[in-house]
Image (cartoon, rainbow, N blue to C red):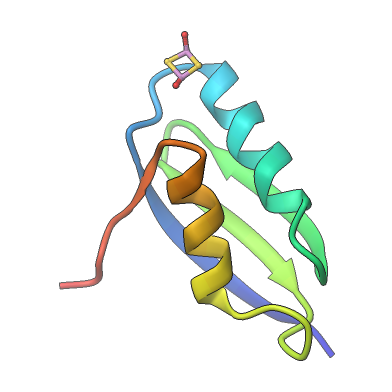
Length: 72
Ligand code: 9UX
C-alpha cells in the first residue's frame, strides 16, 4: 500500500537544502520515494501509510530547519 503527498516547503534557497530535506525524509520508516524540487518548492513523498503519517513527514522537515506551508 502506498500514498503520495506533495508538501509545499518553505525556507529552501539552495541545492544543499534540497539534499538535506531528501536525506531526512528518507530516514522515516515506510518512505519509498522522495523528490524535492527547489524551483517549485515542493517535496513529493511516496510512503506506506500503515507505517508513517504525513504529520511525521512534516515533523522531519521542520526538525531539519525548514517549514511546510499550510493549505489556506
Ligand atoms: Mo544552502 Mo540551504 O548554503 O539551508 S543549504 S541555503
